[in-house]
Length: 348
Image: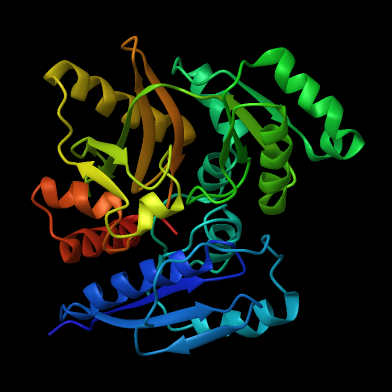
């Protein structure tokens, strides 16, 4: 019998999405451990940056992060790198800065260790909402009307930043950190007082902020998955109907009963095909690899608008990528095993 593939599932980190990452990593670890093809270990990175190697999956539940993202301590990282020495492949179960933004991907490439998902450039571009939308527009995709507020502009004058938003966008507006995910730090502002509060909240998660028009219509998401021969195929479209708030916020994403996630979405064949083509085009325009999941809006006017692309979608029981894969006939265990095999096929 051939030697087992040694898979290290990495999770946690100093991101505000630490707990979501731990929950994703635990599910991946358990699924890979159920097959006889893999020898699985976990590297769990604490909020303080300490790396820990374990042969057991953590018990973790997704909870919203409170603190802003912190840089990885140099000494802890240097001590942690040797824990990767026996890995044949790394399964990245991070969300947010450090693990999803290209930094860890670059480190693994330097070490010639295969890893799941997109490379450093695509990861960094997708994480940066402003840069991603510039690429979307260049490739002919429709994006929301928005305004980027760099940290220096907000520091110089919050009142001027508010004035700039009001001069360019009508209320209501969506205020979000430029970097980050899981809807942390995102809020809707209907007036100037709420806009002040929303900018302050988003600034806790990232110094650069993106303010966009609030779209009305149907919220959709579509994942794409690469095959071993390089073909990119879309998974079934999911429609999201939040119950916890006015948009698909953290509670709607991760709490039981937080939303209805209809898969496949009740769309016409033409609408589904258009959503899937946009998801593929977003994946390719950013240079993504392996898999991704794009969030979109079908507006009341019938326009299709892309919001963002996730290069490491969630892998919790309530996550959207596993649901779409199941609708396409692929179990969670088969999905994560496929992602490992894709990583091993990539040139080092």
